[in-house]
Image 1: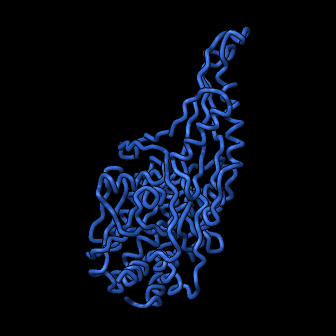
Image 2: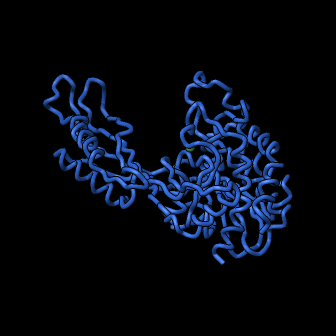
Image 3: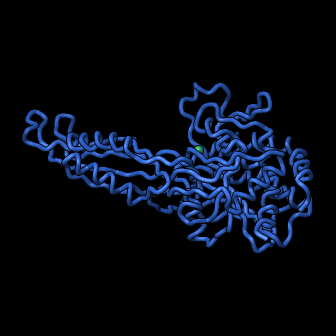
Length: 403
Ligand SMILES: [Zn+2]
C-alpha cells in the first residue's frame, strides 16, 4: 500500500481534469429515466483512463467498471440521475452549465450527486499509476440509474438479477466528505376509503368517501407525534403527502378517496410495524379502509421495468464494524484528523444494499446534504480531490483491516 501522501498528490494532480469532467456531466440533463447520454459520457471518461479491466452497461442501464482481480469485491456506488429543476427562474446560475464561482461548481446534480463521479472514475487511474491494483481486491464502480425515483432499485436488480454481491459498498451520495454509517428507512403507504356516490344535491343518500378518509388523516397526524425516536438515526415520521378522490362529478358525493403517506422508519421500525400502526389509525377513525404498500413500476431508459414495493428498510452499522473502522482509518490517513461518524437524513441506495440485503455500507461523498434538490445544488472543487483520494485509498485500508 503506497502512503496516503502519494494518493493525495495524485488526486490533486487530477483536480482540474475532474472539475472539467464534472462540468461536462452537469451540462447533460439526466432526470430519472433519461440517463442514457450521461451514462455514455461517463463511459467515455472511464475508457480514457486506460485503467479498467472491464466497462459495461447492464440491461437496466447501470454502468459498471471493474479493476483488479482480488477475492474481496468492494463496490463504490453513485447514482447518475437527478431531480428536476423546479422553477427555472429561481436559479441564479444556469442549472445545466456547471458554473464555477470561487472554486465551487453549481448546477443541477453538481452536489446530488454527480460530484462523486469524477473521484470514482479517477480513483481507478490513481490505483493503476501507483501500482496498487493486485490480488487483494476487485474494485467495482457502479454508476446507477433511477435513484431519485426509487432509491436502491438499481441494486435490487444488480444483486438479484446480475448476482453482484460485494462484501462492502461505499455509497457516495452527499456526506460533505464525512464518514456516515446509517440512515432511516422509508416506505410509501396508500390508504383508500370507499363510499357510495349520489347526486350532490342530496348528500344524505350517499356515503362520502372523503369524510371517511378525513377521519383517518386526522389520526395519521396524531400518529406522527407518537412515533419513536432513536438517539442516532432520529425520529420515525409519517406525513400525508398527497390526497385524491374519485367522484362521478363535481356535483356528486365521491365514492372513493385516497391518501398517500410518506413514512420514515427509524431503528426497530419495519414494514409490518408501520402497516399495523396505520391499520390501527383506521380503526380509531371508526371507518373501513384499504391499507397497502404502494408499488413502483416505471421503465428505465433502456425500457426495462423492474417492479418493486416502495419499502426501503432502515440500516445502521456499528461504529466499530470493520468497514466503518476502515473508512475512519482512511479518513485519518488522508486528512490528518479523526472523523465524526454520522448518518444521513435523506435516503440513498444503501436502503437496499444494506437495509434489504445486509451488505455492509459506508457513506463518503462530496457536497452537503442540505443543498440537494435545491436551486443551490453545488459542490466545492476541493471535495472532488478529497473524494478521489478516499476512493483510491479505501480498498487497500479495508483489505489490510480484514487481514
Ligand atoms: Zn437526491
